[in-house]
Length: 215
Image (tube, rainbow, N blue to C red; front, top):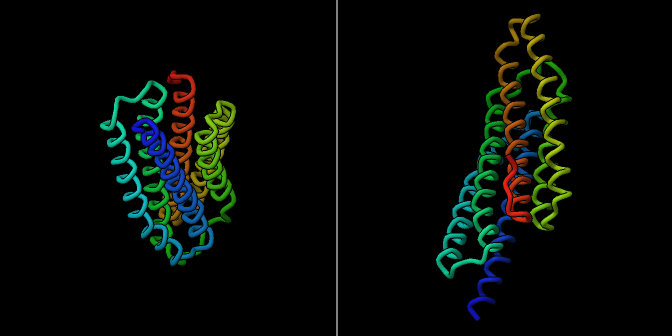
């Protein structure tokens, strides 16, 4: 009876984690859209939703601790619960970076953009796709999906390098753009970090399946 209750709790834990992941994925997309559209209302919504992510993290953490206390988990279950604690930390940090991007939208307000935003939205699309792939890999316990997602991190890194070079050149040619260009560099950096956190989740999925951590 206790074991069945334990399995039900594990299932609910995973469902909560997926709900948190879906919210974070939405936050990432919305934050980038707020910047490209200079949509201040959307930026404020992203910032307001960050508290919801924080509460979800605390609820899942408490559920994990309860599962640890309930009975001594078997090896596979132990990996599942301990990994959930790691994953929610990565998700919470992604949400923080989405909030950082939204704050930059507010700082720029309706200031004309120094260049058409092409690479940053593409970087945001890749980063949010990585989150979706990471969560799918988690649900399916799929090494293939985890590996596919991790490979996308290279594409994000290449885009980040291109954005960095482009903005550096703009600042050199037009010193009056340094303020906005610096903000846009921060946005690219936040998206690169989001991709890194998604990669972490992929690596935690590999750990759940194999019991081995990638070096």
